[in-house]
Image (cartoon, rainbow, N blue to C red):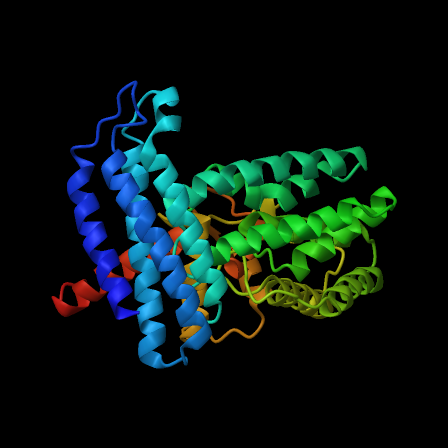
Length: 392
């Protein structure tokens, strides 16, 4: 295995040198032919050797490390070849360029490596650029088919947009690089939605199935959280008595608790699983209603003429994170978070909301945005510097 890895590293160095010299002409079949022919031969030889290793090798820590190193080197090679191929500006030339066929050959070798060593292959490493291009077409076609099928069945349009947004994100390349895990997640979500789309059901049953599928598949994105929070709030606020509000919220809580997440992945690895986030939100809401003296009053302070609010120079998303930090570090020893959020939304203003929406602050408290976390971190670093320099 070490010899294969050394050979691959040598090829990467050679290809890097070829990068600046590659030129395809109208006679693209001959341009780049020597290096392409050599690489294609090497790929076939490596496939044979890997098959033998898979059949005879005994897994060990050192061997597994070599497999992962081979995987990352192979992806580096593929990315370099892909960039070389993209220097062919004209589409007809581009399609005939020998490097294009070499990219396909080494992409197949990567897939072969994954099949032969499934327990060693690192699924968290980003997919090569060439694979992204191939998957783009597949996912785009799946998106069109699923959307058309579910629209014909009269699925709720907003819910459908929420359910399909992972595919739209991929097509717009919302992440810097997608991993093999991300790709596996998307394809399993396609399979799940196709199964739902093929079942006969009423519109109400269809919407319910999609909601449960979102939780089962751990689609823990911000749009999904906002959709469910809005749904729970809207239905709960339609009830005109304490008992009915508690009844419907506890019903939602029961339904979600009965759903089993059937994937080891999650859409956003930086966030908690969707089931935990939703059940925590519902429990807080139930606790707030049970302890509220004015059960039928909605926590909407836009309608109140309150005293002058304390202004802050940060948006709601960042204020919510500061609140979480104060609670977690026991600066605010407040056990009822819902009541705490009510107080902050009533007496504080943010740079983007002169009168803070209770629901907005509530949502951002339980589902903090990664970009806002980074901004808060910078503020905390600045504060720490002030303390160190004794400038407070």
